[in-house]
Length: 242
Ligand SMILES: [Mg+2]
Image (cartoon, rainbow, N blue to C red; front, top):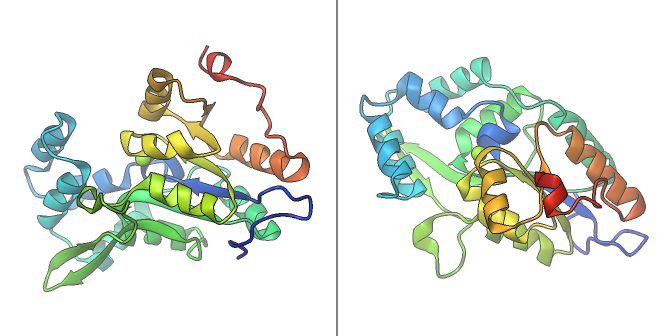
């Protein structure tokens, strides 16, 4: 995969596609799906503390998955059986691979459940920038390998990952749905947003395209690769959100 010196023959930066996982690349919130099935009895209380701002996402995830009653293989099997990728993910991935454009998942979730769904979809080669885990003596250990320097206590940073692709010369298309996607939306060259992220982009006046599946993103990336223009790039903030 070509990820360095990323200028095409036209001299334009190559596109790179980065997508959030839960509720974006995946139709479902796979983390919550696993907690519903295997989590300890109080996990929703911990989620409420997170939603109330008492703990951060990193703490919420570590606390809730610490009490989970299943091993890695069991959870991966459950994901493969019950979760699904959003339409046109595979088509967009195929377009990117055919043209040598990077496409990766950028998530605050856990690597093993993301990997499980990608593998089932035949997309196990897609790079995953998520929380790396190891299972030791029935416990999950969490490893944060994509932190913003100086902000390590916050866990991984999606903005850091977006910027790292831009520093390699890429024009970054990003898709997401939640609060943790906001820092990526602020710096991505093109943002596709839905759910909470769309609201946050409205509030912070960050331009975005409405996301429902990956078809619009595929058309936009293809247009950019062919012409240097993104389809719908005439849509400003007001029109997009009208
Ligand atoms: Mg999400």
